[in-house]
Length: 380
Ligand code: GLA
Image 1 (spheres, helix red, strand yellow):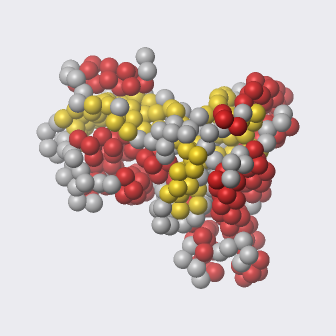
Image 2 (tube, helix red, strand yellow):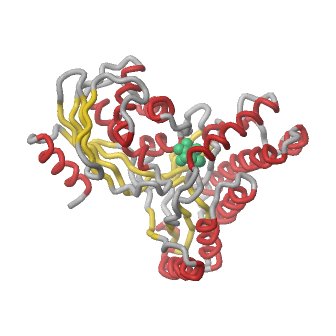
Image 3 (cartoon, protein in one colour):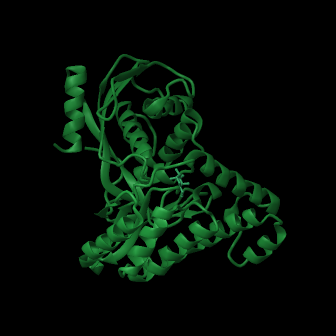
């Protein structure tokens, strides 16, 4: 069964009715631009083909219930305030709250969810869930909510309702990405450019390597990085680190007396430039040439932002040693996935090299697959 069939079957079993429709939203891989979003900088994600599907039908006004094939039991709620619904159901409850808080008349709904986005792997399974529910409720309610306003609402659900201090990367990717494109997003203006990203035509592929490293201290460390960046921007007298250019970096570093803060700033400022350089190369059709930028991004996350773990460092090095043009961790960090830019016909060799390196160190085996840029959130 496909994930869409799973969601529809779950709806029928749970609610003894046919759903009014099915809505899908993808997980994402961020090609480059890590921890730049909440610094109002640049990111370049693409949507995964793996999606979360919401099968949705009507319910009385002010009543919502959610069911997931990945969890026990149905969760029902009325109008709630941030934090009142916890666990996985807090994401859909947060979407209802964020829409209502923005003044929308949200229709009551019964929702059955099924997902093929790996959870806890840094591929934005929570954004996929939020975006599927948001898209469904916006359609069902006929809400006047343009696509470019949706990511910020989903982000509010996560920041305020669930209480995770994330940026706007994941929700933007899940909602605004297009098939065969990477999404160049300015996280200050929310302007986007859809960058053609047809790797197959260039004989290339992106191999995603899930390190399967246990996520540890993710929330606390993420929040600490964010606070450090905001404190640095305040100390430098700029609205956000986006406002420091690579040319202005030496002066900015000289003005800070904390070494940790200096390294955090250096990561963000150089990472923004790497996104711009990657976009310029892709616009010029020079895909293979982005490899060194990906690898430099990884070194910056490892040495300056300090968000990698052994498993991802080993996967990156093994992929490079096996001939990848570039490789880096993708997502928030402290585990999660690595992406490697490789010749399309070398996936088995690179995967084998990563597996051997993991076995030699006694790591839990990694899981690898080729990722092709899929569509953003949509009604099926
Ligand atoms: C997580 C967050 C995003 C972004 C990335 C790092 O995925 O949810 O907002 O900050 O980490 O780039």
